[in-house]
Image 1 (cartoon, rainbow, N blue to C red):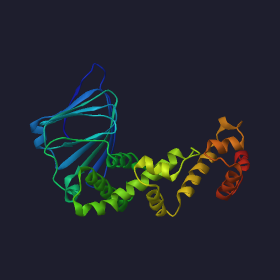
Image 2: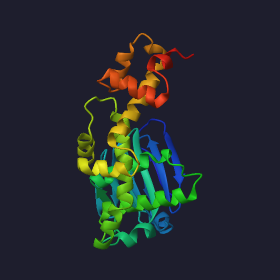
Image 3: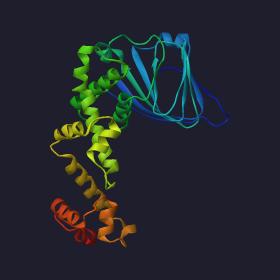
Image 4: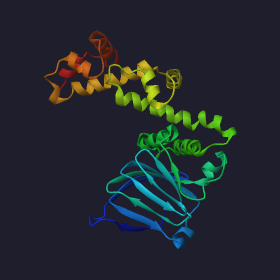
Length: 287
């Protein structure tokens, strides 16, 4: 997207981005110094039929487009039209997730057409799902599998439609398709990042994601493993990494188990041997 860039401070302009082109969309991780990006009427007239979603991870943005002017803080987002003039002010060290998406992918799912100008998106559960979904795209083999890439884009469009307001016939479809996939991914991520907490439960994970404990368990059933099995696997993998860490050689096996979220040492030893075919002591003694 063509734009003019102007540094807003005497510091040297710096920018870093990683772009993943998809089918009908581009996902970008973007960091920048204190700058203003602006588009005049001539540049806007050459804009394509895509919409830009800017999700703020760090710092803030000031969006001005036609009659709209608002700030975007971490966890919030903005939708900016590519065919309109306007400007965006980025604060120093801002970190943004950008999504350029063809309107045609989302328009059939919406209750009404796109906003006529920039639109502020609050930190709703649907936006949090989209934010997590985009942030974890590196875990998906998007570059090598065209079918998987198309499915990923479809689910992304579903999340965007849920944020903007789907029509009544599309709501059930989105819940059973893109929203469901994003929630399952968010559940697995929450288990992975919190596995070492001894008190972690399906109810806590559900509460953090705004869904019920029962729905957490139902979604995990599709993976072929229960919540407990996912949690145990993450804890065992964490324990094996700690057992191989040189700076932890003075820690006992019991200490390693507790650091990995296990409160029952006997259960840890049995689970470890069943999973890896060796005892924790045996793994630690390997060269």
